[in-house]
Picture (tube, rainbow, N blue to C red):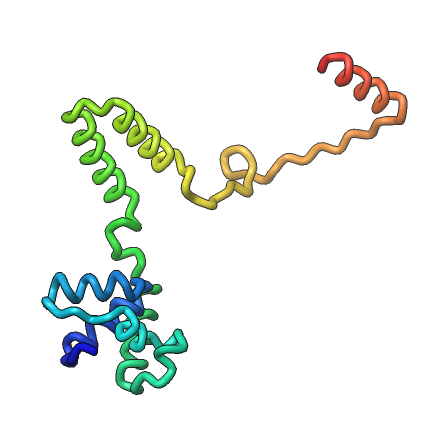
Length: 157
């Protein structure tokens, strides 16, 4: 097991609080601090997992505060902003075009169109035309009219 300073522990706790998997945190420690920390040792700093059930209060509090802040400030994450995503897609598109990858460029254009068209949202319009109330029509029909309409549909299709 690697000997960790408070700076290393803080880094681990905050990364785990932002839902980074222990493997990624371990790799980040190697890249940024030059230390090898096994994945299982990293997992001990996540109080939501069995391995972290005995985590000290200081680190548990930091984890909870970081996770709370992460959830509340998602708008500050660049990729959560549509303009940022479109800018990045533009860069990827340019890279594909410069390399002659027309198929990749077409895929990026499709992705951008979906982004702008709202394909990745769960918003639904619950109003009528122009924001007014939804128009509802009630039509009274008898059985013969229904039978005639069904017969017409069957004959058309």
